[in-house]
Image (cartoon, rainbow, N blue to C red):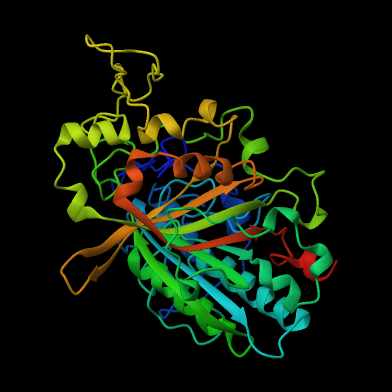
Length: 445
């Protein structure tokens, strides 16, 4: 749970229903949204007409000026709240679900191609998945056999992201196109990995600000898999809901720590260089893509909660109340690694998690984290099965995740309170252009 790499929880301060909501970055103009194919509702009102109706009320809904659920009602109906109207775009330079803020609900799911399925079947599956993702992220139903789970909701900032595991390339005869960066991660001392919940040919990340919208997407992806792929594992997570705090702030994890203070930010000049494969990178089909490391990290909460707040702060190296470094200042004040107390002891302990994970202590290694917390019940002895679904993004895991995790292995004070129980590494290609599906440049190149 790297201090430098958990994202700031852009606990997106949403406007209340009836107030104007700002358009999200990268969203199309209202005219572009209105050019989408019309989808009739149960009342016979087209999506185009409804968008016009929403605009007539003086309310700008989310990114497209009127994103709505697919049973939206005619003129005079109550408009969507701002949480439901948020819309991320499927098409773009990068896949959705990487640079967006934390989402309230998430599902991570891995598939293996079915016996006998190869490149042709994989291409058809990615084509189906991409078509479904585009529709669901726009607040529209799946083309076939929609479950109606999200019938009353808007897009709710839904994102669906697709990636390929190491084994995918052998199953599809594309070994020569497998990136070197996708080589298996090394073993770490904190690993207690369950192979049944690790790796996979294909990986899908689903996130949304509404639980039913996220589940609706999960079911659609599973149904689209059909006979081409079988489920390998699935994990479910959550974060704080947008608007739950009085102002946007860094998220807290299940240990109660503010987590994400030093996450790389898109406005930083070297952000793309650290997080995304360049246009000139290899292999060429990974241009504008990224590599996702996925780890199920169990928190030993019963042991952690026995510590005093002061002891917890020394493990992390930051104040629990406001996330500021033990060396002083605010949450964003640079940590003074040399500061000592009256007895000459380092104020930030030498094995503090925040000290060890700093980029300047790891040759500049940095990664963008967008995790979810999870709680999967209790063990037979009553201990909670809870922790972090760690997801980090980087242009190359050998320069991002691996050096930081190796450093943590050598003496992180937090290591005795966590356990890595599942792991995966996935190549996530760049975004699909209009008319393309995700991975097309690999599967048809």
